[in-house]
Length: 259
Image 1 (tube, helix red, strand yellow):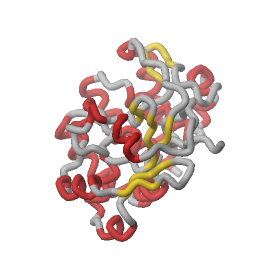
Image 2 (image 1 turned 90 degrees about the vertical axis):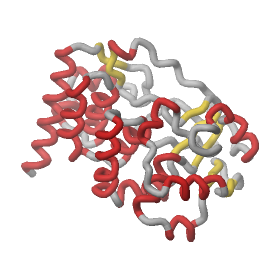
Image 3 (image 1 turned 60 degrees about the vertical axis):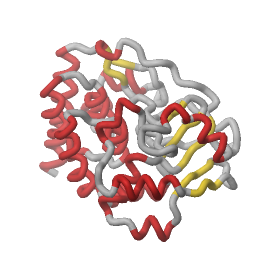
C-alpha cells in the first residue's frame, strides 16, 4: 500500500495503516482541540501564537464547510478549487497555516521528545500529528508556499516579531519553502532568547536540503542524518555546537549571495 507522504521537513518513520478515515472518525481524533480555531484546525496550543489574522473569521468559516474526500488512499478535507482561487494571497496564507488538507492514519506513534533544553534534534517535532491521525499540507498548499515564498516570508515576519516566537507551522513552512535567504534572520532571532532549539534544527535542515558540502561532510551530519529518517537523533546542546551551526549556516548563506 502506498505510504502516507508527510512534508519533506518531517522525515517521519510513518506509513498509512488504512486507505483513509471517514470525516466523522477524523473529527473524533481531534475533539480536544476543537475550541482552538475550528474543528478542522490541526495547529497545537503551543503554536497558536502564529495564527495569521488575515481574513481569519472568513477562513475559519470556509474550513468549517470544507468537504472530505475519502475516495483516495489518503483522505483530504479541502475547500473547492473555485473558492481557493478566489481568495487573496493573504487569506490563502491564513488558510494554509491553520489547516492541513491531507490526512491519513498513522501505524506508529513517534517517540516523545525528551530533555529538549539540552538537545539539538536533527528533525523538527511532528507538529501536525494528533495521535493516530497524521496531517500534511496538500500538493496545492505546498505549491502555494513555494510559488509565493517571498510574499509568505514577508507575511510571517511581523507575526514572528509580534509574538516573539516562530510557531511550529511557520517552522515547517520555512523548511518546505527551502527559505535559505532567511538564515541571517533566523540566527538573529534565535540570539534574542536562545530558547528555541528548533531554529538550530531548521538551519541544519536547510543546509542538508541544499547539500552544502561543509555540512554534508561533517560529523554532525553523520550523527543526525546517516539514517535519513531518524526522528530521535540529536546533538548535545552546548555553546560550541550552537556556534558551529551558526558558522556553517552563515558560510552557506554567504556562498549563495556570492554565487
